[in-house]
Figure 1 (cartoon, rainbow, N blue to C red):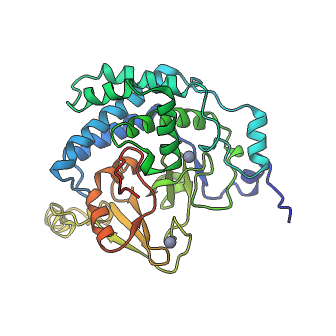
Figure 2: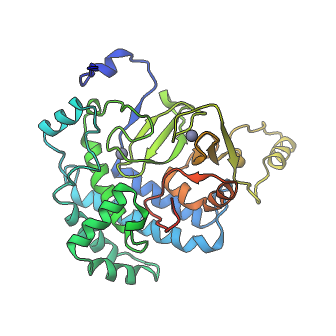
Figure 3: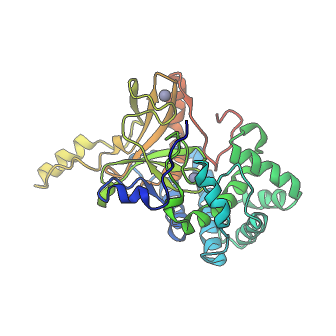
Length: 342
Ligand SMILES: [Zn+2]
Ligand SMILES: [Zn+2]
């Protein structure tokens, strides 16, 4: 059966009032926001996501990495990583494939981007003590081995990813892919046959996020772990198998936040009750009893500053709770590689 493919521009022409199906990334601001959020989480300042002491140092280290990603984006300039040529984009489109596939050729300068990331990190002020040995190991990595780690990161093969070096390789790849995605004409990224992979690069999402504001109000998006695009998926649907019959939600109990008590205090002070900003609804796991996996969902209606990748990293307690209940994690976080991650 030959399926008729939509041409660039046709999708948007179908309905101007449709839910925005895709948000391409804004690398000039996203890594800065992520660094800020990681520090907020590490400082224990997010009521919906209590962070245990042992994780705070790692979040601080990843905040330094996000700072470096931000500086690198500025240093490279908007076209510092070039898009594939029109023929490649056209071929991907004609085969209903993502236009910037992580399984395809990597940008020619990605290793230079990686080297520049290490240079920026070497200049980091107040660098945590774990950074120097990591940088030394990264600089000593031969080019071919680096490609192997990139294969593991982009193919999500946790066994091929060295936990020490993989997060830094992933950080460089995020810079390269998000900078390409930011230059892309959205029309090249048509919906894929599956809604569970990124329509821009074909990667797995790191988590879901319920967005607020404009036409995206209250809608759920999946956040790509590599190119940082977000694509729409209806709520209460498994982001792994796309079934919707046995989906439920498990919360992360916020020990130090009691919305009922807060609302009582608000009532005493004559303030209106606040249905938004409920800390118990900021971070939840969406579990599926059809495929027995879970993925986390963060809700901007209850915390304006949610950042899917940072919040996923910081809410490891939720992974423990849901894994103990028998669910497997649907896909990993590119900034954390544990052998048992997936
Ligand atoms: Zn992507
Ligand atoms: Zn499922």
